[in-house]
Image 1 (cartoon, rainbow, N blue to C red):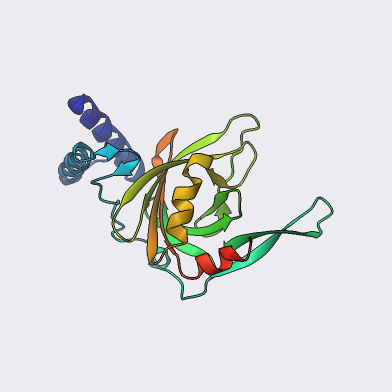
Image 2: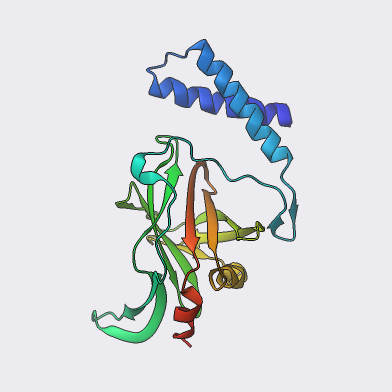
Length: 227
């Protein structure tokens, strides 16, 4: 199984390299890719999962990101209360917590590596959702009219505890809703202190992932205003 996985990773990496270099692969690049495959396999072998908590995992590094794509956070008091609107475009009295300015991170897929990512987090008393903007402007949308997009969400809290959570994007929607059974786990982290790391994988496209950081800051104080 390990040999098969390594072979698949090698083929994927070589294919990506060939596409970027006009199908010309240098022997030194092959050696580098093999080293990357070996490192990835070692990380996977070290992965231990117990009760939804990852005991050992290194978040993917973000070497050489685009200048504006480095992982950074905003200053204190970054959360605010917003209000949903009804079908007549009028404000309702149902509020939610949202970051006033976008959080920043990086995303990678088969076409790009460590490109700019902007993120919005919305949390009300029933659900938490995540809105992603690739390249800082292209909102990630589920273009399917029937099928959900599923996502694996790895969250690391300031005490270095890792949690595996799940989320989905409904057909035609523009945000990932954290599964209801994981909602309290994410909420406890946001109501705490420090900075929370998120690593999101699209389940059907394992080459697509998003990495970003979310400061807890004043989230707990603002969330209390919803109750």
